[in-house]
Length: 174
Image (cartoon, rainbow, N blue to C red; front, side, top):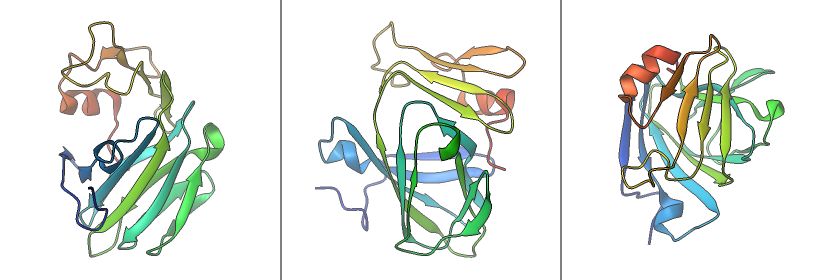
């Protein structure tokens, strides 16, 4: 069984300042309609720029460290044990970074409604995913994973290298 305090890391995100280890504990526990992932951010890194989801609600629980939460209303350091909900839509826009000297670990739980559209607030870039597995190598041929910049440039994320996409659409943490 998965454990949020001793996770088995599935992946690493490494796009410049945007870095984290990821453990998809919800999928490992057998969840079908909820996502739950543990993210561990080293000091001086960010998880994602300010963004909002059209379909999915998220909830963040701080497991360790003091990550900084950024919303449309400002920013503040979080404490271990804090729980914050991000409703779908502009009111739920959020970003997370680690300004602390120690690693920050959070559990992010979300509904898994698809198709999903996310918008990066500062750049206007829009991401669209047709299904939970749209970026997986095992995804069906008809799966869609697109990024569209505010200027109208479109990129099929299934064909693009992640670093190139991050550079093209300025998706790195701020």
